[in-house]
Figure 1 (cartoon, rainbow, N blue to C red):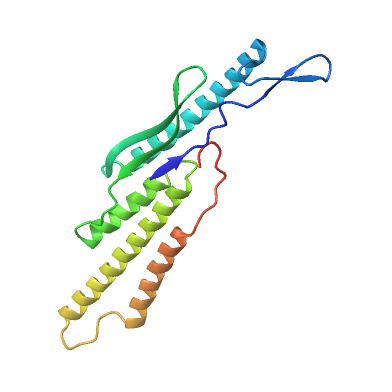
Figure 2 (cartoon, one colour):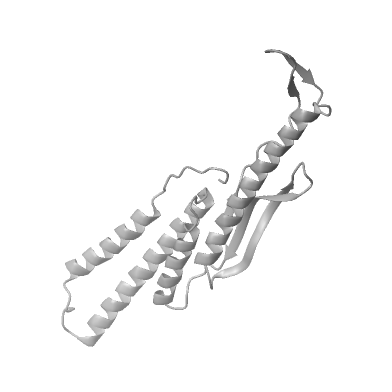
Length: 195
């Protein structure tokens, strides 16, 4: 799962400094007024701290929900702020998305992957994509379980029709497919600070 956060530009080509009532004077990039520069630096640092906090909380939510599937803990992309400190502006958590050894295990794993992908309050587009892939994996596992049930049912009664009518089994498979498809439908979120 990948998460990227967009940080505001760290430097402006020109700073505008107030000069009297309603007048502004452009100062070169490297020479803003001291008071304006301090205020601007404080605003940039505050914004970077906010983004850093959101990114770290986002990745922590993935890790908590993916317990047991985490292959590599959170990695962060950082930028150096005007105060000289590093701030996280993006991150990712690597999880195992391979199918299980059995359809039951695959189904459990797919449901956990989906939950981990959607765990943050503001899932990224990549998170939503991973959740959709997990829903497809779950659907395939459910269909395989249904096939196994059908084979077991027909094997237990050789020469006879299955105990469950074919139309009922088809309705169950369709319901499982519709459930997986509706859970994989794209969702739209207002993403602030991380996208």
